[in-house]
Image 1 (spheres, helix red, strand yellow):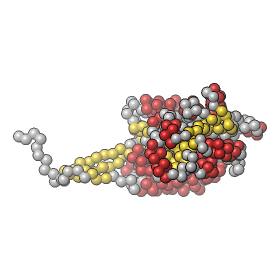
Image 2 (cartoon, protein in one colour):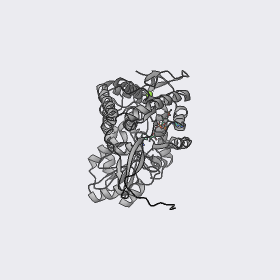
Image 3 (cartoon, protein in one colour):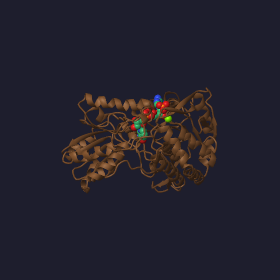
Length: 487
Ligand code: NAP
Ligand code: MG
């Protein structure tokens, strides 16, 4: 297991010698002490990236792609080890890390490996006699700051398009979950990424993260995390006017119309809110259900929630693991009181499981709360296995509730009415909409939000645009330009 900073192709301790323990949220035991980067370490990484950039950005795009494809293969060859590491560091059930997180990470590196030499510029039809063409150039050195909820997957979402486009990367994983990204660094070195192209530096947000956002030689910062920290990133980036990309919080509306297939709603919504213990920016955290079927939906949904198998993430039968930290578990549980204070009714869960074997871990039962759309629990991101339920009577009312938060990341709707599906999808303020499903993602499909959920898109061609700058070149082929100052 790697626990040091990855700078210039090697694992090195931080210059200060500072370390921080990373814990297993199943029992809060220490897994390892991990080096913590400070300003001087980031300066070293920036110098390494700067030295690597000319050669890397001028390498044939197909060669950059080939390394990303080799990395995808290496990830698959190491799937069991990576899944284990991710499960003990984050608390994700092994069935998820092994069959979702690891394959998706490999798939994203592979997708952008294939993309590298297929992302083209264009020729613009301007006036006769001129050739105007557009090329896409890498930004240069890119800073990437990521959260703890999908640390392995986010290495691929962030690094793959940046590298395919020819940038060099300085990544700061979350202090709670640094291990899987360091394991990816190890594989990158093995498959032959040149030194300095990728640097991974665990560190504290307000120290290392803040410095990456401020750094005068970093040309872009891509951030995934909370809206509050997103605002700080924007401020810190203003010194050298960096490009900024923000994937922030969400409060996913999940609208269930009266004509929906109830069994599909129950399964899809449970995946939407309870997968990864609800620690997903795109979690289906607000069910907005038509009054005509609310009782039936809730009865089945609560019955399912009560049978979800909570336990040790390494047990292959576990369906929900612990939250990723004790502090976060306490924050999620505090929202149960917040709900009650405003008249909310707890229908299921609302506490840690009554199981001695899990007593030292960060566990929370699947929680369902009936609440008004204006209640804090319906407005604020809880980021846990915590779903609010509200009923509605007309489509307009459902839309007003769905659009009634500051966020706009993902939203879902369930109906058999084709026109309604498309109409409501059009009217929802969000970056992603799922119809009769929830929380689908793919490396080719743009991912991101509007409003307080941030700006910019990961995945697909959109991501390649985000990690490049357009350059427009005008060539006078045979145009006769009348003199502007005739003499
Ligand atoms: P967070 O507190 O915003 O932290 C995210 C990252 O930013 C961590 O690496 C953190 O470092 C770092 N950081 C903290 N303060 C910073 C500062 N002043 N300057 C620069 N970096 C700083 O978020 P979180 O609680 O870890 O993650 C949960 C949030 O992420 C939720 O709001 C969730 O919705 C959001 N999220 C969004 C998406 C999306 O794609 N839209 C995806 C997943 C999660 P430390 O680890 O040291 O705190
Ligand atoms: Mg941990």
